[in-house]
Length: 291
Ligand code: PAF
Image (cartoon, rainbow, N blue to C red; front, side, top):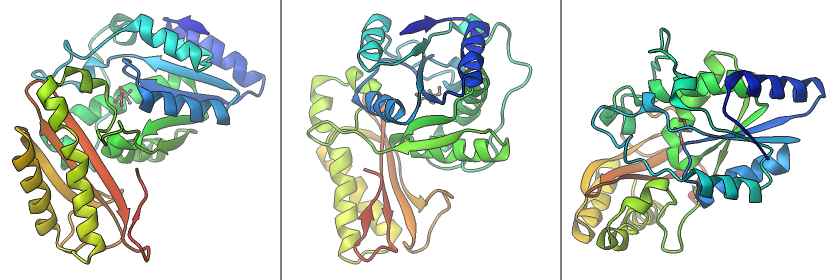
C-alpha cells in the first residue's frame, strides 16, 4: 500500500493506472475506520483493479460549534486496517494541501438540504459536496463507495454527480451495525458508558416504527410520535429530529407511500448520532432495503 499526501502525486499515479485501462474504486473517509468503512473497502476491492482510500477530516463540513477538533483521529491504526484490507493507495492530505487558501470557489447544494441534517447543520452539505468534487478530480474514480447511514449525503452526492456530469458511479452500501443494533460510527467512541448502553434505542425505535407500518400505520405524525416516545423514555438524548420523507427526493409526505426514509438525529452529551431505515412500501411485504 502506498501512502500519498500530495495532490499532484496522487493525480499522476491515478492517470498512470487509467492509461493502463485499470478501474479505480474510491472510498472517501474522515478516518477512525470501523467495520462500516471496511465493508465499503471490501466492496471496492471486489469490483475494481485499484482501490483508493482517503482519510481527510474536512473542516469545510463542520460548523463553528461542531466537533472538528474532537473528531477522533488515529492514523497508525487506520493505516494498519487499510493495509490489511489490501488498499492500494492511502490518500492522506493535510488541510494545508487541500485548502492552501480560503477557497475562492465552493459548491452550493440547492436541493435536499433544508431537511434532516441539512436543517440543523447549515453549510454542511456544501462542505461535503466541495471536498468530494476536489477528491473526485484528484482520484478520478470509476466507482465511489458511501454508506447508507448518511442517506442524505448519498442523496445530495447523487445530485452532485448527475448535475456536474462526473463520470463516476456512486455505490451506496448498507448500514453496518453493532450486535445490539447501534449503527457503527467513528463518533460512537465518544459516548459515555451509560450513553453507550442507551444508544441501541435509536435502532429499536426505528424498528418499532417499521413494525407499525407493517401492521398498516401510514400516518407520518403517529410514527414520529412513537419513535420520539421511545427515545425519550429510554434515554437522556436531546432529539434533533425524527422525520419521515420520500426517498431519495427527501420531500414531506401526508401519508406514507412508495420509497420512504425514517431518519433520526439525537444528541448525547458529547456526540450527535444519526440513524435511518429506508422502506419500500410498494413491495407487498414492506421491504427494509437499506439495512
Ligand atoms: O461521510 C464522510 O465521512 C464524509 O462526509 C466524506 C464523504 C468523507 C466527505 O468528507
